[in-house]
Every structure is written in structure tokens, then in C-alpha cells.
Image (cartoon, rainbow, N blue to C red; front, side):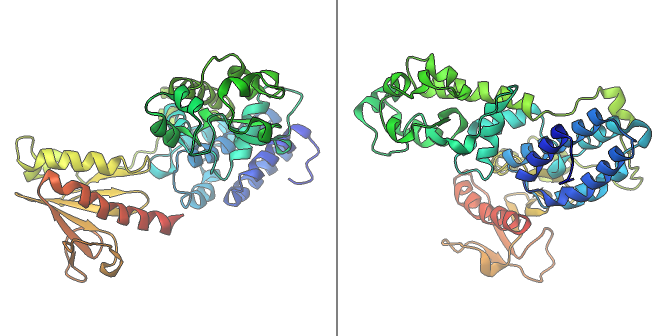
Length: 388
């Protein structure tokens, strides 16, 4: 692939290499060989490459654990139908679920808007693709530096505090490193911490810039929370055009669905748990705990089993056993790993309890939820660290 003579294909390879997804190379080599053998057209091959690029990048933006990619790419070629090459490839990606999923537009946009892009490993790649979308005269972003429209300096000037209004500190903390507040410039030191209008109008400022990312900034009269959010949404919309999601109608997609018949396996719901019926005392407490756990990360999934409810990314990190007057939680950690200042956790190592892990804790009141989430977050972080 490194010796590919076609400029267009070589450019796509370069973008994929930038993302450093070595596990995709065995799959790409097989598809590349099919292209070289004339089994697929150049246009189809490029589409496949771009979808792989989008798949990997969207997942990175959405914070989906990467450990599953090895198995995904190892099996992906087997899911391609030679008679319907591109269609079956797109179906294979679209039918991935849970931690193997291809993030759809809404999830991708939502996560891109709030992500700390400044400290994101692939930030230059992101800005390069945004800046050079649909243009022939390409900009080398390495010749520019990243500019925070709202300055990084924690000691904002009075002008900036007035610009951001009363909740300036909250806005600064929330949006500083997000895509809505970032751009490119060759005048970073000159722009510095100046007020927005000065940054806009000065020599080399936003209104005097050849950078497309600065065009919308050149037209604004102020820079505040509303404008940051508005610009972020515009950029996110553009991102869905650059990193596209495959599209297939439902009828076509249904052709590729593999239905596993599980004759003896029942599908359970929350209502199947005796103490979580709608009128049971533990139901409201469970619903609040459930909401907080699912909000930990977009990769968290719920699996309702016969004896407990599991919350997992690639593996369980907390299991909830509903009981009459409490929710019994199993945290997937060794007991000596848990940080429990209140000393409420129990060591159940080797005791054969339902659920995974050696740490057990009960929650029976809403007031206990904050501390309970402090413990659960440790199990979530532990599992996440192991799979990344």
C-alpha cells in the first residue's frame, strides 16, 4: 500500500495511517488485493477506506473502547459478500452494536461538541480535515498553531468577563478546549489574550485570515456561550459530511441480519424482577441509580438478566441485585483495590454471590447515591483501564 501510485488512494491511506489503527491493516490488505485483482472498482475501494476511517475516528470521538477493534477487523472480511461487495460491507458496519457500533450522526455530533479536542490525540488530524474539506488548495495545519478564541488564561481580563457575562467562570471551564472555541492561526502570540473584537479586526486576526475555520468568527460581534455552541454545532454538521456513516434502507439491511435462535433462553425485562415492579419501593431508587450509571459514558450498556441487572462496557463493572429493602451491588474489582473511606463495602471473595467481583455494597436511600456512584466509578475506571 505504501507504493500505491494513485494519488487519491494514497491520500486515503495517509489519513488512515494518521489514526494509527494497525489492527485494521490485515483487513485493508485483503480488500486492497481485491481492488488490485479487479474484483472491486476504484470508487468502491475508496468508499470502503473512507468508511473505515470514519468508523475508527467516530469511535475515538465518542470514547468507545478500542480493544474490540482487533476482533472486529479480524472478522470483517468474512462478512463481505463478493457478489454485493460494497453493500455487504456497509451492512456489516451498520449492524455492529454495543461497543462495536458505528456511531450514528447524532451521537457523533453530540460527543464532538462537548469533547476536549485540545487534548485529543488526533486534534491536528481533526482540524486538518475540517479546514481542507472540499478545497483544492490544501492548508498545512502544521504551519499554524491552535488558537483559543476565549483565552486559556484563567485570569481573564475584565473585557472578557464582561463578554462572557455573569457565569464567565463556568463558561470558561466548560467550553475552553471544545471545538467551538478552537481555531487555527499564524498569529498566536499577537492574538494572545486580547478581547474578541481586537482578535477579529487586528492584522492577522480572524477577519484577515485565509483560514476557513475563521470565516464565521470574522462576522461576529461578540463571543459568548451562545456563539461557542452555535459554531460547535455548525462544525459538527460539517464533520458528518467528512466522516460519513454508511447508509442502507431497512429492507436491504434486514437481508444481512443474522438471527440467532435461542430456543431455551428467555429475554428478561426490569419488570421481571420481583422487587422492581412499578409499584415496588425500590423502583424509584433503582431508576435514579440506573440513570446515573448509564450517564457515566456512551459505551455503558445495560443487560437485564434473570438474577441481576448488569452494567458493562466490554465486561461488567457493576451488577445490581434488587432486594425488598435495598439494592445489592457487586463491583468488579478486588477488595484491596477499592477506595472506601466510609468503610461500607464488604469483601465477598470466594463467597459465590450473584454478580461479578469481590466487592459488595448496599444502597437503600437516595442520599447514599452520590457515595455509591463514587464507588461504582472506580469499578468503571478499572474496567476501562484494562481494556484500553
